[in-house]
Image (cartoon, rainbow, N blue to C red; front, side):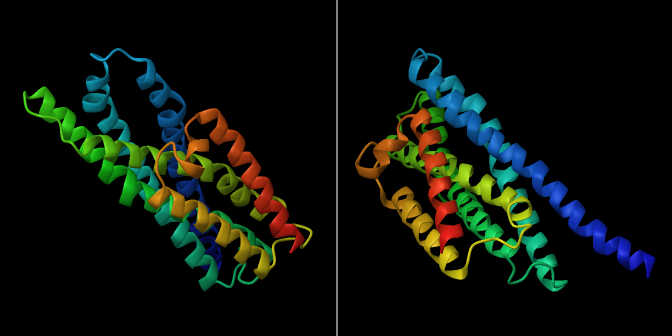
Length: 233
């Protein structure tokens, strides 16, 4: 009986701990890319840039993408464990965390289906040039697509972290988003994601993502909008 109780408490705790640890690694590198490396590359000498692409970026991207993978898997298993043990289903906690989970899942998919595949094209092109070959003509577009997805993930990260924390700290009084609120929030999130997939860098809605400071401001505003929708509906 005591062992079963210990397991029931220890497993979700370990999952949450691993989720936090992996998430810090992933989001920390996301912020490094967007707040440090991208501005640096915009100002760096032409001779320096290939070294960043060939030597620095692959190392950072390894930790970045596997941090995203472990964050997603531990979060997914944690929610499954909770559902299997009757924890949180149909509650304000679940409604709130589902918004954060939706954002996190889209961010994970952006990493593995857009950012990493496109960055591989950019890195391979730089390696070809370093070996005396020709640059891949698709590298520039691949870089733009990776940039837009990465900026979108930075934008998403702000409300994502808000709702992950809000699930445990803003629903204690029984308050939380209704199903209608969750649905509208999800629709808005998917609209932003559509721009990450089909939008063009520096054009239309994507233009606000060009500057990292604007992304921070927009992300804070989006978090507020989602929160108000979640609470008022």
